[in-house]
Image 1: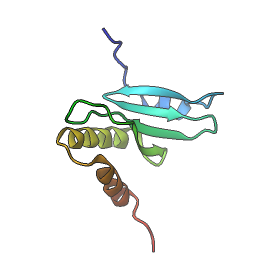
Image 2: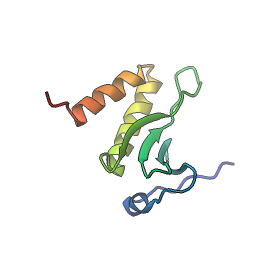
Image 3: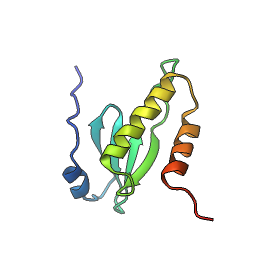
Length: 104
């Protein structure tokens, strides 16, 4: 039986230090914090398509611009959309435009 991930806390996310190689910290339900050696922290979500295949993990935002709670909400939205067969790339792009609209 697989080991279940323990939910991350905001303090754990904030204290995640870059290492020599990239590593990930799982929050559960497909949400992962990816920490790179340069210090960049990215939120990624894994999801399944309606045919049961797994798509590549999608980067949904970067910490601290996207908080842990926002990442959890976005991950659930993307997973629901993927189950319904909607194109998840378009959903992520529309969500990013709403969260951070471009200034012209």
